[in-house]
Image 1 (cartoon, one colour):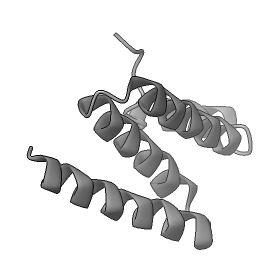
Image 2 (spheres, rainbow, N blue to C red):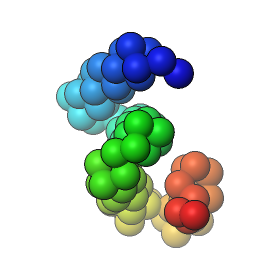
Image 3 (cartoon, helix red, strand yellow):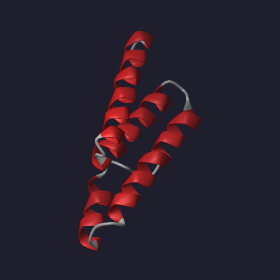
Image 4 (cartoon, rainbow, N blue to C red):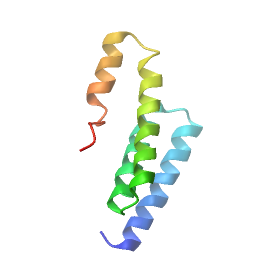
Amino acid sequence: MTQGKLEGAERELEKALELATEVRNPPQLWESHLAMGELCAAQGRRDEGRACRIKAEEVLETVAATVPDELGARFRKNSKLKPES
């Protein structure tokens, strides 16, 4: 991806994060944090990428803690949050 496209993607993800926060949509919020983390990592910004991943995990865990265990486990399983390599 060219630098211009990466910057455009970052702007779109920033908008998605803002909107997900505004409308209180936790699944979209953790997905957007995760995508931002992947984008940052692709740009060589590993610390920022890791911070975004941590935010995604925090949102996921907050949601998972407020629902029945079975549903929380399903959120975790399907969240796209995989162990870092």
